[in-house]
Length: 216
Ligand SMILES: O=C(CO)[C@@H](O)[C@H](O)COP(=O)(O)O
Image (cartoon, rainbow, N blue to C red; front, side, top):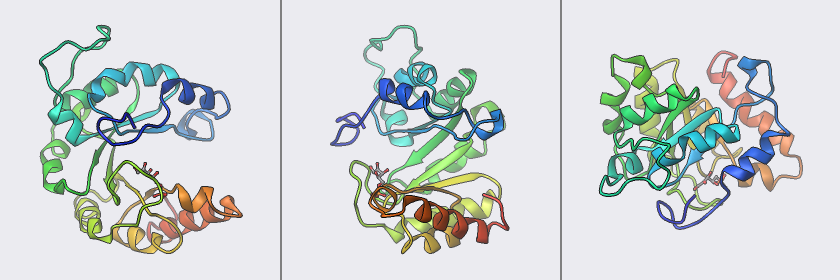
């Protein structure tokens, strides 16, 4: 969170880099975990290489930020090329060796994603879609079930794609999200506020696995 795209600020690349030293690389690379960096920031093209170098595995940017990036001035960091369209940005993220995610806010229609997902060039297609189930900016908000039809529509067209939900997820809301087809779950308050975080994580994982025949 950068205080521009959303009205709040959180940690940046140096913190990601420090945490990375305590967490193995992705399972696919023999490690324990994937660093999925949800970039709630304006001008997401400017930070791709910085977060790659910090240890990010999946760089997830907001559709709204990519399409509204202004091209009037050069980026301060001239080592990165300005990328304004989602498909260019996805290719750039892939070129730098990361997976690419694209996120939409509650006010954004899922229809903006079809053209991006149907791109014939795999390098320009996202590996994951994130459907926000709160307005981004703050943890601890109420889950918006109104966003789940977007998840269902995506799952119907893309049975195997990673579909993430974020905001207000916990044991009381996971069934709705999993029923709609979400298989990547972000939970802040429910996990960090729990007496037994591991138990909550297991419950969320099991709810998804149950719907997906044992696979996330
Ligand atoms: O960053 C955001 C929203 O901006 C989310 O990732 C929340 O932080 C998730 O937290 P909870 O809604 O689970 O408390």
